[in-house]
Structure formats: structure tokens, C-alpha cells
Image 1 (tube, rainbow, N blue to C red):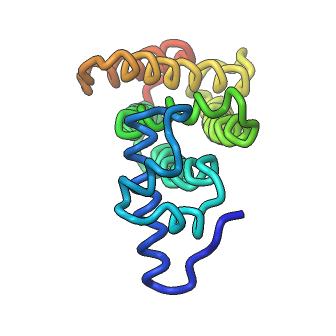
Image 2 (cartoon, rainbow, N blue to C red):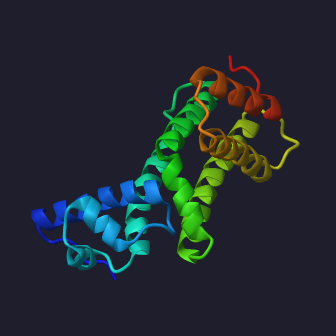
Length: 200
């Protein structure tokens, strides 16, 4: 059970613990992190951590919530642009967000091996991503802008997996992110797979 802060001071304490937790998890990984490490990084007593968080899993869940929110935001694209421009912007936003959170996402993947709640969290993120792309492909099919002989949900799952897998591999290896090259290539692969037509 995690305590909820009722005062400004309480909220600041909890936020500092979350920030410290992120630093420690990114440095030590899930298995190497202890509650005492988080307390030390936050500059508080061991007992203060337990006032707000019962376990290191609950700290990681709070840290992950802030990361997942950013990834959800990266999936949104503004209306009005062409389909190709929206795909390009979505790929760019996702890679930018993944790059910023790559190490923490790796830690969440580590925790998911033994803790179902983190598997559920990652599955929910992926399902949301796929659902949004499925809706987009279906709309483009209705507008005769992409091929209509593919299952929209299957295509969405495959394309989302491509971008996520690329991000995990690229940033996990510590590769330099050449934004234009990466984004333009991913967008070209999306457009080619769907046979996207240029909008008039």
C-alpha cells in the first residue's frame, strides 16, 4: 500500500523519492536496487521511504507511471496534416520519448520477468498503441489511401512492433540517434507496407 500525500510537503517528499528512485533504478537495475539506496539518493531516512512506499516495486510503479504518461502523449498526432506527415510525426515523437526513457523501460522489462503487474503495464501500453494505429489504418482504408486487402489490426501490431523493436535495439545498444535517417526510414517502411497514396 502506498501512502498518498495530503500536504505540499508530503507531495514534494514523494516526488523527490520518485526522482531518486528513477536514478537508482537506471544505475543499478531492478534486482540491484534496495530501498536503502533510494533513501540515500533522496537524502532521507530509511523510514521516510516506507512512509510513502511499501516496496521497491511500488516505487518503480510510480516511476513507470510518469514514463508511460510520456509515451502515451507521444502517440498523439495533431489533425490537419497529411497521413504521411502524421505517421512521420508519430514515429519521431515515439523515438524521442523512447530515447529519453530507454534505460527505465529496460528496468521495467527486467521487473516484468517476475512481477505480473509490470507485464500488465507494458501490455496495456502496447495494446493502446496498436489500437490507435488500427483506427488510423481503418480510416485510411475507408478513404482509399492505403491498401484494403490487409487486416488493419494485424498490420498495426506488426508496424508498432517494428518501431518499438527498433527503438529497443537501437537505444539499447547505445547507438547515436540520427533523427532524420531513422525517422524517414521508418516512415518509408510504414508507407510502403500500406501502399500509402499521396493525398491531393
